[in-house]
Figure 1 (spheres, helix red, strand yellow):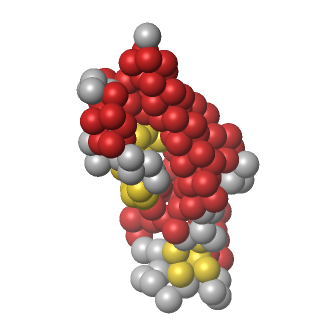
Figure 2: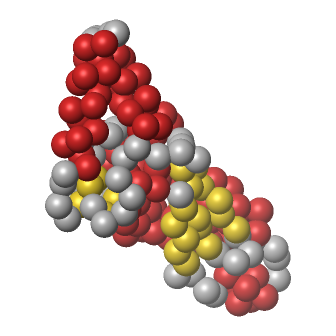
Length: 171
């Protein structure tokens, strides 16, 4: 799952021409620092997301950023990150036998129930999920709700890098 948005700083090239020095290295360092700070925002939002907040989902957040294009892409390489972020409508395919296997493993791990009883509990959960109207799985919108704060962090770090470059060029 990924979400791409543009960080609204479009005058970096003009600053480079004005200062007469290349500041791409400083911008990249600022974006790296911003990515570390923004990851904590996503981890905290994931924890507040409820039952879906697994350790894998929290640890899976990453960023791709480009100082030349001034874009930031939020990524999570965990297999179930897309359905967690965007949800699953009840009009999509119903859960089948593969989901039952995964639910059995979940019941075994989270509820501590094993054997035929785990199969029975997993089957009941699968049936309840398949009977839902509207959303089969509610969207959590972790990235969507955090994107303003992430953009703010990136913009602040880039502005600080620009200020440092200005001060360095003024000396």
